[in-house]
Length: 119
Length: 119
Image 1 (cartoon, rainbow over the protein chains, first blue to last red):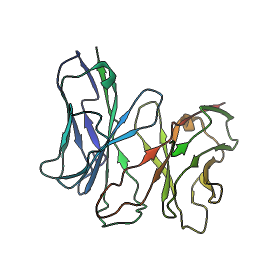
Image 2: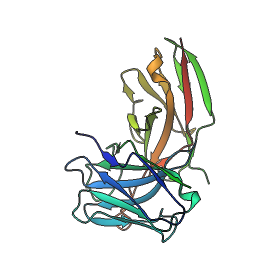
Image 3: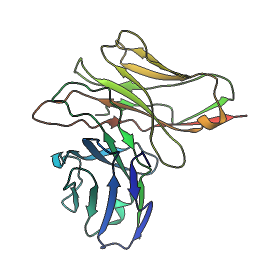
Image 4: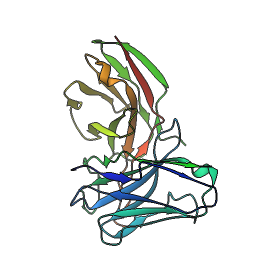
């Protein structure tokens, strides 16, 4: 399809397990974002990539969270030693912008998210 | 401090009537962008409309329009002729300017308003 694709759609893991969430952005989109959305809340920023470079990881809640985008397309968000507070929907978004500053009117295009439940 | 405030956790509207969803924001920068997204129960975030801080006119997109009052720092979404399919969560989000050093282009979201359209 032409949209942002995320897998798996649902993930259930036991506390302490590692999980990996995949994001396949829209082809050609330079920018890729990960957000975490707790139940009943708005999404919160986790990390941002421009091509393969991770330019901002200020939103990652702990060093158990790790993200990569090695070839500048598909991205993986990994959570090590999962805890119950990690339960949330993880949203990936991409956009075509690649400018050097200012404000862009380009919207971010979101995937359907991965609903992660930690037991 | 909250940068985006949506004070209406839930709203009801009759089919075919108009509804206004409130959003106020906080920024000290004169340059910024405001976005509205719709999130149905399926989970995907759907871009609706954009307003730039320097735009002279209120943004419109089909049945969606923005009541942008810069001095009051509000950007309310107006949905005209509501349809049953408009029932969803609605999020207001802001993007502030980023510089060469930060590279951050993330959106800051409000907590959302759940709209229910009644037949």
